[in-house]
Image (tube, rainbow, N blue to C red; front, side):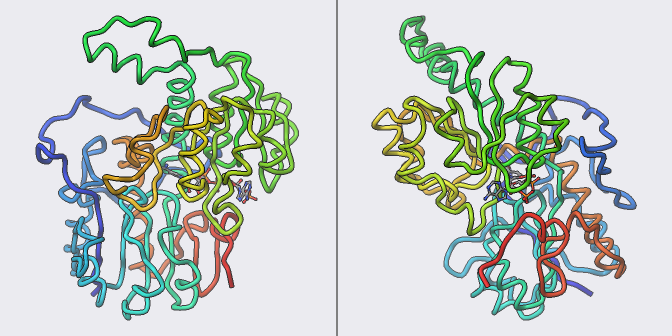
Length: 386
Ligand code: NDP
C-alpha cells in the first residue's frame, strides 16, 4: 500500500468555505485541441468547491483510503525540518501544485528512497529536478491543459489592466477620490498596439486568439511554427527568437516553460532592446525574467508595467522587490487555480493515480518523465542538462 504525500496551500484565513459565490461550473467536454478533460472513474468532490487548499485535499482522501493507501496532507514545506521533509522519507507518491510547489530537489530526492511518482496537480513540473527524477527512476506527471485557458484569461486581464491603468484607478476609488487626471495620465488603448508572445503553445495560442478581436497586431516566437492556416487566420507574424521579436512589441507576454533555454531570458540586455514604455506580462515562470533587471527597467521607465503571477521562490518573501516595484500588477500564483481549474486538475490527479495503482499507462500527454527519460509532453516541451 502506498503513502501519498500531498502538499497544498493553506485554507483561507477565515476558514474553509461553507458557501460559494456561484452554484455551478459551465460544462466543458474538451479542450481547444480536442483533448478530452480528465476521465477518472469517479470523483468524491463537488466541482466548484475549493480543492487546492489543505482541507480540500484535492478530493482524494476517500478514494485513497478506501484502497488502503495512506494520505498525508500538509502546507508546511519550506521551514527547516518541515512536515514535507519529514514525511517525504518514506513517501511513495508526492503531489503538489505549482502555486505552492513542493520543491523536489536532487538532495530531497536522494533521501526519498521509496519515491516513485511525482504529480503536479496543474501544469509546470520545474519544481521537480527532472535530471534527478531521471536518475532515480521517478515518474513525473502533470495534468496537461487543465488550466491553460484559465492562465490565458489571466494574461488578457493583466494586459488590459496594465495598459488601461486599472489597478491605480481602482485604488483612487477605494481611497474616496475622483482623481481623473491621476488615473488617466498612464492610461492607453490596447487597440493598434503590437502584442507578442514568447511561445505559442496551449496558453500562448489561446492568448493570441483572445486578443485578436481587440484589433491589435499579433506577433509570436516559438521553437516550432504554428500551422500556416492559423498564422493566416490570426494574421500573426512569426519571429525566429524572442530577441528578434521584442523590439517590435508594445506588449510582450511570456508563455514558455522554464528550462535551461529560457532561464534568465529577460535580462538587462533583452529588456533594453524592448520599446521604451513596453509592458511585460509573465505568467509562465518567474526565473525566465531576471528579478532585479525587471525592477531596474520599471524604475528607469524602460518598462511601463510588469504583471504576472509567478515568483521565485513561492511563496514570495515579504521583502521580495516585486511586491513594491513601481507600476506592477502582480498577483500571487493564482491564474491556474481558479475553482474551475481546480475541478479539472483534481480529477486529472485522480486519473493519474488510478492508472498508477492499476498498473495501466498514464496518458502520454500527462507524462513528463517516465522510465528514466523525458517522455510524452515532457519529451516535447522540456530539456535536461545532462
Ligand atoms: P505548452 O507546452 O503547450 O507550450 C509551451 C510552448 O513553449 C511550446 O510551443 C514550446 O515549443 C515553446 N517553447 C519552449 N521553449 C521555448 C523557447 N526557448 N522559446 C520559445 N518557445 C519555446 O505549454 P503551456 O502553454 O500549457 O504552458 C506554458 C507554460 O506556462 C508552462 O510551461 C508553465 O511554466 C506555465 N504555466 C503557468 C501557469 C500558472 O498558473 N501561471 C499554469 C500553467 C502553465 P515546442 O513546441 O517546440 O516545445
